Length: 73
Image 1 (cartoon, rainbow, N blue to C red):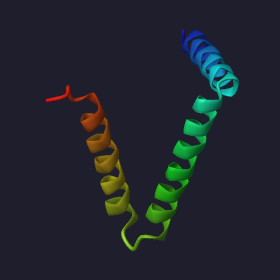
Image 2: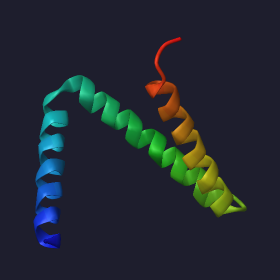
Image 3: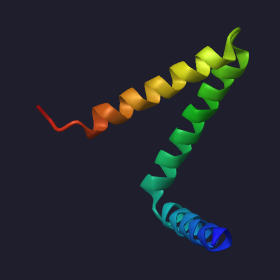
Image 4: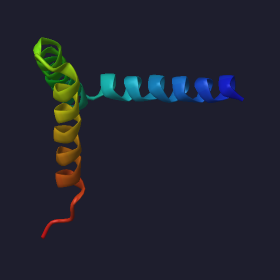
């Protein structure tokens, strides 16, 4: 069962990658997300307290998602 699920996720990942590669706007967005992710990883790695920095990064990401998903008031 595990192998079947992994195969499904793999196919889904490749499908998404092909879709992103075909759309210039999606490629630009993916590059921006990768850049921000790298910056966040660097911030965590160079922090004096990496666990706290990682928690703060997760909180920022969650706050951003909540702002996007909240209906316009």
